[in-house]
Image 1 (cartoon, rainbow, N blue to C red):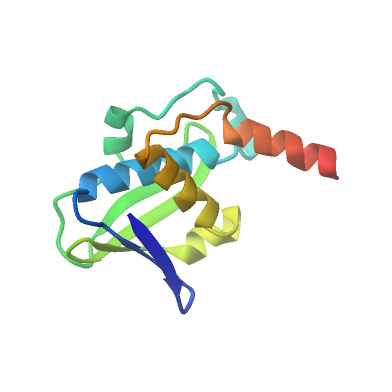
Image 2 (image 1 turned 120 degrees about the vertical axis):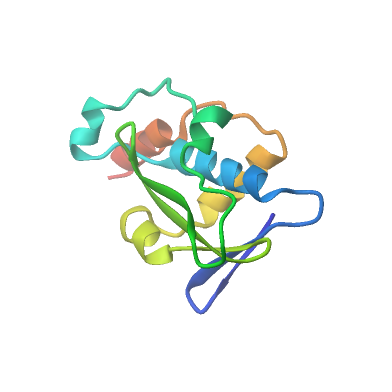
Length: 139
């Protein structure tokens, strides 16, 4: 997987030996893992919930034609994911940055985490709860 930001749009490319499903799945997992519970989302938040392959696949719509939205994540189990990905060509996708960045900031940490998951790195702590603790102590 490779990604780059061009004129404010995040392009995601599938590399040789990878499949579209595989890459979209690790992005869904990373988005979920790094998303915080917000507002009433705390009622649905379970800090021990893991995004399995089966759950991740529920947010992915493949096969698809160019121009189709292939990942749609709004609020998932109380977490504010706001991750929407559109297919623009074979092995080429774009992240709808405006939706993501408005609520979550830049997507680079999420995409970097997706690359780590792709490489087999497991999470040691939920980033969403860890991030919340860091924010609270730094204020």
